[in-house]
Image (cartoon, rainbow, N blue to C red; front, side, top):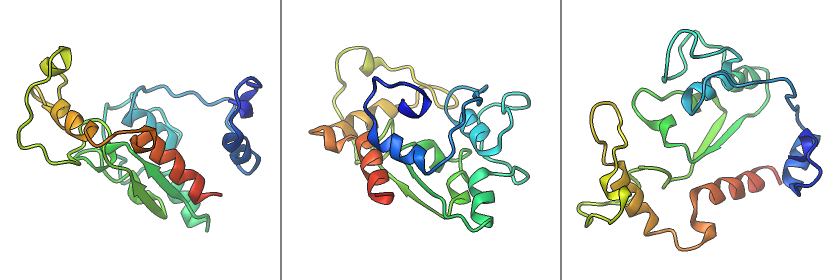
Length: 167
């Protein structure tokens, strides 16, 4: 990305954001992937030193919350369903406002009472969520039926909303 020295990539929105924000040139995430990495980004502390996947704790000093208390408006735009799941909550509550884009992963966005099994390895998914097979792939297939073009993808919607939020 251009703010970090990559001059081959054309990313004018990231360049514009970097011109009005701080860049972190010496920051490394130690707890990959997903929610543990997010906790590190929120708090500046390594997460896996004392626990695995989970929410922010009441004692955590969260960056968006500290900024909000200092009078700086913070806004989250995410297609990351885990913020709203049991056990993963309260990250979004630390922002001044938040916007969720539905349809990512196994989001229960579109109704799927019964779907015929799809061929291939996806139909035999072994993705787990706690104990046993979660069946999240069924919801992912149901959501994908409503994605017809690039503009329909959750990731695209996140970036478009970000551009609209900070024009």
